[in-house]
Amino acid sequence: MIRIENISRDWKEFKLMNINLEVEDDEYFVILGPSGSGKTMLLELIAGIWYPDSGKIYMNDKEVTLLPPEQRGVGFVYQNYMLFPHKNVFENIAFGLSIRKRKKEEIKTEVEGIMDLFGISHLANRMPRTLSGGEQQRTALARALIIYPKLLLMDEPLSALDRITREELIIEMKGINKKFDTTIIHVTHNFDEALALADRIAILRHGEISQVGDTTEIFRHPKDKFVADFVGVENIIAGTAREGGEKLTVINTGNILIYSVEQKEGNVHMTVRPEDITLSMEKVTTSARNVFKGQVKEIIDQGALIKLNIDVGEPLVVFLTRQSFLDMELNIGKMVWTYFKATAVHLF
Amino acid sequence: MRKLDHTTIFFVFMGSFLVLFILIPIANLMVSSNLNSIISNLQNSAVLGAIWVSVYSALIATILAVIFGVPLAYILARHDFAGKGFIESIIDVPIVIPHTVSGIALLLVFTSSGILGAPFNNLGITFVNALPGVVICMLFVSSSFVVNSAREGFENVDPRMEKVARTLGSGSMRTFFVISLPLSLRSIVVGSIMCWARAISEFGSIVILAYYPLAAPTIIYQQFENFSLSGATSISVILISLCLALFVVVRLLIRGWGVYDTD
Image (cartoon, rainbow over all chains, first blue to last red; front, side):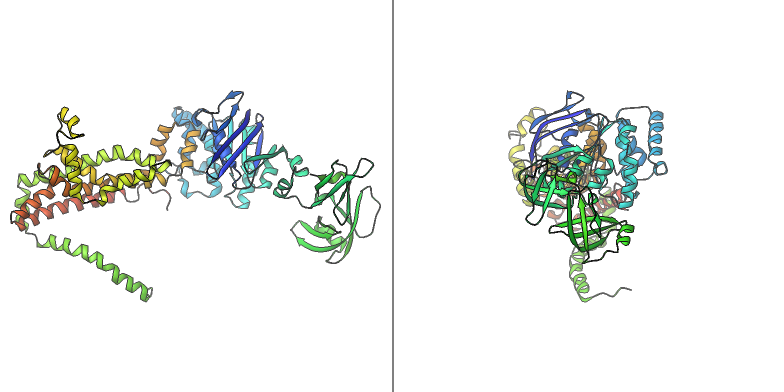
């Protein structure tokens, strides 16, 4: 659907360097990056609001690099909605159709249909400033989608909303790409949003794409420490890796030896997801390669889950359900056994 | 009742000085004028003609300022470029130089042999002691009100709103007319009123470039020079009443109109 080749642009404090991306038809693609990474500029380049210093953009195999935005058929939704303040909700949504000189009755039917879909029919005559954040964002989505854009670009569309409204909108936005037969590129700094919505994710850092992959790939196998930190991976431990026999790599952290099935040598970072670590009070025999005894250092109640910090020579974060936490009668200072498989240890 | 602290009382005391300083002469002017003299002046075709010259020329000057000033304001609001500071200063220069100096400067280029006057002279338009002269004097000294106010209006329109309109299929010119302009219209109108009011009151440069046809401030000066303080006073009252009335009417018309970001 859209192919970005070697796009670069240097403007004020923002910089994009050799961006290459390919997004498939009807895909929900999320670009994840911290603020200042150039996410908005990348979207505005795709929309045609700016032109790149170098590189090419193709839509459906047609080059659009220098095409003005009104000829691209791209929808845009901003964080602060950018509703036209002098037009009511109906007129805002109808804007794209009025520009296309569609018949009045036709516009009315279509706008009413889409307002119904987003549950905002009762707001038709309201002015934007009287709407809540969630209502404004639904209006902005409807306004962008009513022209059935081939591509919908969203710049932090949920960041200005409170948590409950955000979760409601995530549910509504899920599958919107299929419903409107549109490809979506959504940029955000919030990993949970990406996790809930994305088919694939790209990580943008300092104007460069550092990893592209589906959600599991990014989550399970962050390519570097930045991605790992950014997507909220726990248990990142540095060490030196060497060949350990039986197709295993052994990582010496300085305090403990950890086994992994991934092949790497030299200075590495390793990570193991907290949910891949099991606990027991007494030592048990399992197939897990990595077995460590450690002391509970910290207990953090996170509601449904309890987060434990266990010192096994290196600090390990482990999650327990509330029930198993109560069953194990854990408290700070207790000694426990931790187990995780060599396949659960990712090296980078 | 809210208790006023010493600071507030002191500031109100100091602040009221300027209000009274402006109010007292104007109020005194209004009450000291002779009603019969006002009525006779209102029947004097020379006086009415002079007021008409001022109001009419000021209107033309304002329309010209809007036609040329709004595009300039939009450029200044949306683009950064080398020499932008220079252009901004140029626009403000007429505010800071004495108006007689403006008059001399205009006279030098707008005489029938001047670099700007000559081409217009070929088209049959002369400026010295003619209505177009009054108009350009007014345009010169008051157009900055339109530019600065319109620019402020455009700066308050989020450029991303224009970008959204573009993606929805609206070309850049159309986006300007359906999004940017309506949202800045209030600022443009306010700037135009200021421009128009300032143009009506222009005297210094008009008296040098176009003493005739007599504009209202010029005829007041003429009366005063001819030892007729009461004549000058009553014309002043007529002019000031007219200006204030129009000012109030337009302010009432635009009250609450075009303000979208507040409740």
